[in-house]
Amino acid sequence: MDPWTQILLPPKLEIMELARQRFLFAASVFVLCFHSFCHAEKPPSYTFVKHAADGPTVSYHDYIIVGGGTAGCPLAATLSRSFDVLVLERGGSPYGNSNISNLATFVRNLADLTPTSPTQRFVSEDGVINARARVLGGGTCINAGFYSRASAQEVREMGWDVELVNRSYGWVEEEVASEPQLIQWTSALKEGLLHAGVTPYNGFTYDHLYGTKIGGTTFDRDGHRHTAADLLKYADPNRLTVLLRATAQRILFRDGGRQRPRASGVVYKDEKGNVHEAYLKDCPGSEVIVSAGALGSPQLLMLSGVGPADHLGSLGIEVVLDQPMVGQGMSDNPMSLIVIPSPQPVEITSVQVVGIAPSGYYVESLTGLNLVAALLGASSGGGAEPSRASSEQGNEEIYPFQGGVIGEKLARPLSRGHLLLKNLNPEDNPAVTFNYFVEPEDVRTCVEGMETIKRVIETKEMSEFRNSNQSVEDLITLSASLIVNNRTRHDDDSTSLEQYCKDLTLTIWHYHGGCQVGQVVDHDYRVLGVDALRVIDGSTFTFSPGTNPQATVMMLGRQVTLFSSFIR
Image (cartoon, rainbow, N blue to C red; front, top):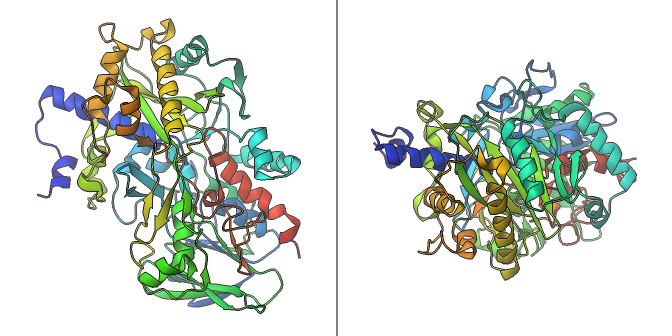
């Protein structure tokens, strides 16, 4: 039996060790909960969705979108109202998968390490365990569902039209977002944040405002998830084709004149390994749009010959355009958390309340999950990616966790990294380095956020959810022993908050960059130096907008298609 199988199917454990494993799950799951994945009680009858193996060997379209994720779905829905659109999605359908649709079981996706799982695990070169989506609807299908807009200041920084942005947010919210019904824990957290100084209280709002607020959720009152895939209901079914299990291999180029390459199509493989070619129609305005996410988009550009010439040459890739900024500016918003075992049962809930501090951190919480035993395999030695185990093995044992976790996310980390190809296989993860906490200011902000969490835990409102014989320092020591990553540990990581932040770094899956505006794409998201090619997703961001970016990424997919530059 290999070591991962032993973890997934644990033998008889000492009681204390079993408790440790349960809390470890909480830490791992909380991190993944700050995105959103996909829902539908009754799967929609999308006649335009099919498997790539059933698609034609050669096809022609006005627009080819690589990635049917958080941005790709609203992009496709809007463009298809006027144009012939093809979407190439490397994952499968979210519909019919209860682990995507249901709040009570969505964490099971994290335990599924099979090649067809809606999540694909990766480990950064910094030793932080992470995940990327591999499903129609993208990250909105696998996260914790919190929905919150970008701030007015962030919209201005992005250079977006405020009226168009607000209309586009409204279009998204009509289908996927709603007000949550608070449970006792999150009501106590709300009051605790206010008493800890995260003021004022802003009530329920989608807007990003300093203080404490109740945000939106993509889980409805029945615990069912709504996702970006649901936005495809607005598409023209006669103008849209969505191919599942279609993995883009490379973008095709031809000479566009003026010594500029011009995108002309995409080569992709279906799940059987058959090669297909999709081409742009020979008409003005036809484009390839890459919406493959912060890892997938720079990876595909490099595989297609657009990237740092030296790096591409070292892998034998023919250089189409020497663009050294592709893969640069990678950033992840690190998270630090404290585990709080409760003497009383706590309901399962996604993120509902957030504290937004002007100094640059956000405080959120997750509770009461039934944690899947396979999550015990979240850590792998030496930064290697875990071997693939069956989801059936991973789901055989479920450990209940009674309590919650409170975590803080750095809003705008100054530390930056980069992304490089490991090989020529688009199905493999690239190598990504985020350089967590290289900048001292990031450490100072993290410590301030941890101090706020300590004050919240010590409030009267949170006291009923905490064992009276456990001090905050006890909880920090406990958390330090449970958190899983592959980073170097120091003896003082449970007594020094600075070291705690650096050693016990987790992710909240809000990584971004690699194809940033002004560096790789212009303000219309056209790739600089190339014609008929755009990148539209979180890889273009220089910061993660709002407390949780999914609302803004879906909005971007809608509003960018309304730019005059898309009209012909």
